[in-house]
Image (cartoon, rainbow, N blue to C red; front, side, top):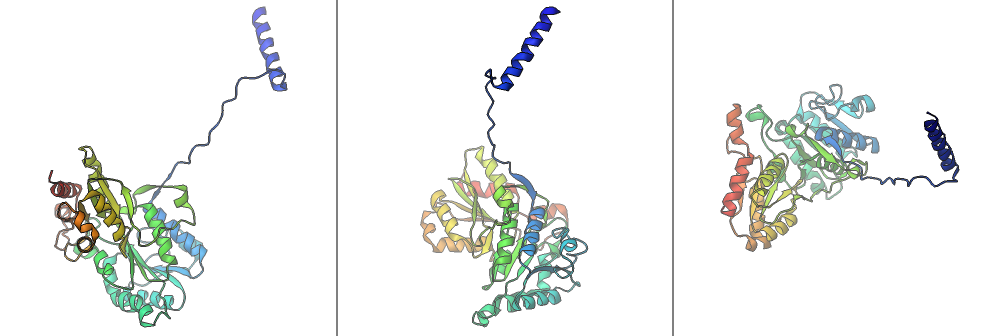
Length: 367
């Protein structure tokens, strides 16, 4: 006991001397700052952030549409914004697309920056005259005197179990029209950056979102979470590098392309996946550079095949320098050329699946 007590007194004394600086202590362990982990953010929350930041930044920006205010939006994209900004900035409208779209276009001509939400782009057909004849053409017809800085946004393309009148993709429709810019985000980064850029743009922008992507989380870097983050319109993003074949897609089918590329990578086939991000103006330069490297091209889209986004890419590649680098014909993977059925099994067969993309890739590469 006496020996133990002496040892404890000795240890206590040594501790006092170390703290006083009269004896060297054990080497200190260094702490290294780690790279901050990327945050997981859903597409819904990314869009909400973009709306909040831009409405706060610019007093001319406001949101209008069906159920966007008191109900927090049909898909909760505008959650919390009405309580924060009030009736003048977040405006509930009657169920009249032609009416509230006309109000929004007129407000843009008068110097405001409206964001016009459609509950689905299928309903934008009710307001097509306002979008095309008023918004898209006025800047040209006024010799540049009357800009129309407006964003038309909402879910586009197939959802699940909503049949023919709620499942159409309008990328080719709006991409056809000069005077419009058309963007189609896939990830949370795309959604936030493209929406902020669209709101700041002086031209009418159609932003085609996807209902099934709203709840999907993506990693967002610290840069992407900042209020200054923008994604340029007209610039595609290479989501995965590859050397054997180029896969080009937009919106939800990008997920299918990434999955198909991962499956084929196990067999040694490396696909380069390009996320278009913008439909008009399409970034043909990025696609051409990729095709010159891989010598093969497959396009994937949820819309109908005739006169679609893939058809336009095929034509542009054929007309350009990349055509001579192709080792096989371009293959398109598209939605079925029929109105969308309601039955689940039929619906699945009308929408491009991962297996369809893999089949097209193997056909193109002759494997």
